[in-house]
Image 1 (cartoon, helix red, strand yellow):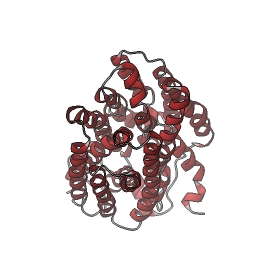
Image 2 (tube, helix red, strand yellow):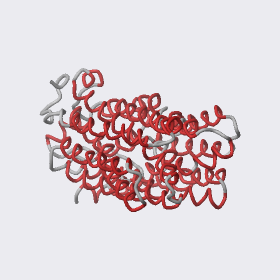
Image 3 (cartoon, rainbow, N blue to C red):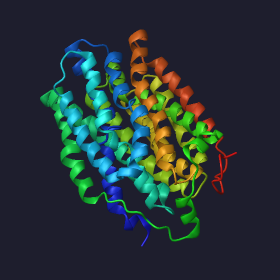
Image 4 (tube, rainbow, N blue to C red):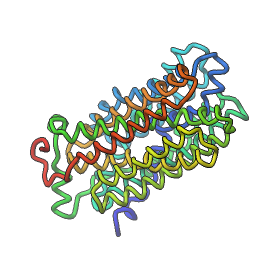
Length: 404
């Protein structure tokens, strides 16, 4: 019996937990909430989009804490506590008034109370369980972000149009509380797997410390590459619905573009996950992320609906590469012994970029009246990330001190 068939319930529950996590649920729902909330309270779009800095961006602080805790209290307890905390924070968001600072505080509570749901938790369970099919397993599990991108914008738009934005937050809160938490409680039972082969056993029992990893160039190459991808991708996705509606594309069709992006994220996760088990992962990642350059060029030209869907598909495939590649490359280049701590700091770079980008992108719109400059800077960031990934070099044969 192969690793996937033996551990499919673990993957299923982890993927559902990721769908309802603090990193993706607020992120993929916010685009549908921009117009109704800013219209009611009179906030600018950049002021509203700054909430992502207080949710996703707060991962800069929470991720290292989670990385230190998962090996002490266990990934299952961290996950359940995070799902319950995120649900509570979303309920609080439904009671928001016109005070912008309180709205920011509510989104910060999503990051703090939902901290146990970030990818550090889910990927720690998967990387410790899978050896031969690790890339594919990570791709399958992290496809939850793509499913979220497909369903959540449509779900949120439907809730807003039929019941209002306050009920939309309650509908979002129901997902981690009533859907994910019970399934994770039933099926997310990571167990310590004893590797059968000597090389697997060596990989599981060795690795660089955080200090040793940070002393080598590969850690910083990977971190900067992640930052560049996410400061671009996280600027585009939350602003894509308002950007397209400004061009005359109806909100429901604009949400469909996000859904296409989500489908492509899943394809990217699975295809890239399979390929990195067989080919040099940085090369695979660079090729995938290069597609986002073309997607950004299309959006720069103010496309019609069909071309916008093509752009969404290209961006989604690239987005499907970086997050699971971050997990795979962290394990491959730095080992598993201190994986959670090392990964959490890489994730902090992702969180910082994801927190800054939406407001920065919206600020560009507020100043210029257009998203064109934002799409142009995304082209530069994606291109630079591709070049950096190719500098990672060959996989280390063993983990003795910082990689040279």
